[in-house]
Length: 380
Ligand SMILES: [Zn+2]
Image (cartoon, rainbow, N blue to C red; front, side, top):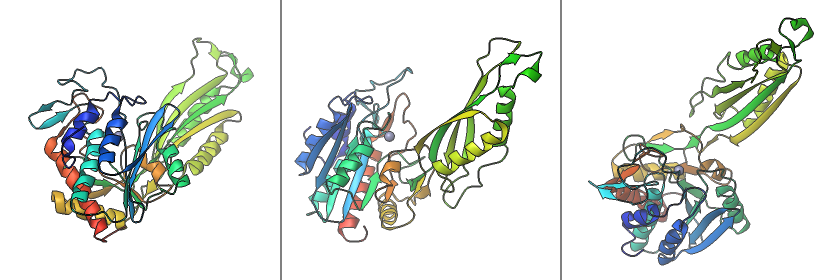
């Protein structure tokens, strides 16, 4: 792209025009790399498996702030769009397109914020971008692998700011300082198949599973914690698949999802599940997949700097929040303090995803203010 990099609009449009539905890159990261190279970044294109990733760094000293995000987008979906999902059309001050708010707009704002910061003088410390093409997918060959590469090459930052859309009603209203963990489990209870008229010769796994499930949802997991809402267990499926009316089946299965706060871990919940199932079933299988542990970045230099930059630039006092689903911040939290701040997420993953151009520019100003404050030695 050409033009003034301190304005995020042009880059946001160039990125939206790349049809980068996970895990396809469609040239999006080359567009970004070109802009970063113009600003003097050393750009590393990192392909793991089928996934294109990018790490770019400007400077080599500390403090080192890393902006993190993703260039992939979810498909445009079946719903009718008023605008071309990959056209980056402007209408009435709104930029339309898949990824406008989740999160090509924020990536353009990273670059514009850096460009504005650099225009005011030499940077102090270093600035980097960690960009994956696999956030909306399995997230196996994305941020996790890039972080391992960063660790091996001396690039782990002091703090990291993820640009996911965090705001609910107006830009600046919400910073995410943590996320709940998420896990899925499938419980299979085995019994003994038999004739429904002769239950004494059978062992009904449906009865056992019913008792297991009743025990699992009998009481809340907790009442919440200082920064988190209460954990939640939701049964998502109960399956027997028995077409016969006179047969006690051999097995019964149920699936569940748990969103958990910092009072639990995937391991502690797995142990609790196993113990609860064992009270009601002698023979069972428990398959657990932990999508992410919960994490929390409590108050500190990163959150304070971000808060100050938002209040000064947008005139809003942000709320610190830990709600919503998981994000790649769960992987980054293993390495350094991480917070998330981005656009208003009202239309993310929807038809007619869009962002006001003024909001995009204001986000760039906030990111720039964060960099200015760090350079001025007020944080990190
Ligand atoms: Zn996203």
